[in-house]
Length: 237
Image 1 (cartoon, one colour):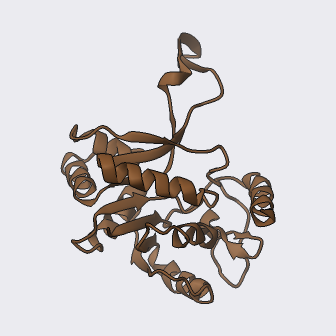
Image 2 (image 1 turned 135 degrees about the vertical axis):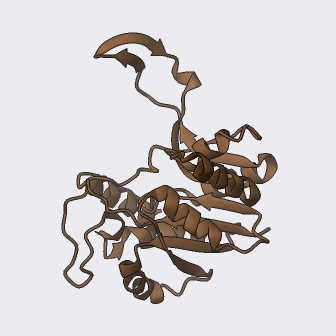
């Protein structure tokens, strides 16, 4: 089964203010160095290590492609990693990557470039779930009580067992995801994630596979301290 992974990495990362090494000239979060390697490279390693994945496509800003290609050369990845030019939004970047996939692709997994601590076992589980149901995402149950508010006044307390905080990867049948993006473009609809586009089709129910609070999305400088801790723990196993 041909399983492609799309990693949108064309974002500007405005919440991450730390500068990058002068050699790269790049200041976005996905390229920040974590123990000597860009965060994006740490993320790529997880999917290369996943047996079910057959290929990876990274959507980048055009000016970043050569730099990223060179930065992974020494990795000698055992699976093909291709690059496409991304768009101004995540949705456009994922769609550009979708357009580059071969017609024999069975499943497509979309993963945030700045979630380098996804567990390989979880990747396998969400891929298998999507292979069975057509659509599956990784998610966790919130630990905090969730309130519905209006103008800073509580209107309801929402039971946590009915909620899931969506993470990535999000995995779908290729034809289903292609159709969802086509419909979104026709309707000028912008989703918050890929699942929100697929949900609009009302063709399949999207399954949720249990994730982990370690699968953090690195979005601000303070997240790097936690990232260093998680990486040290991974390497100590």
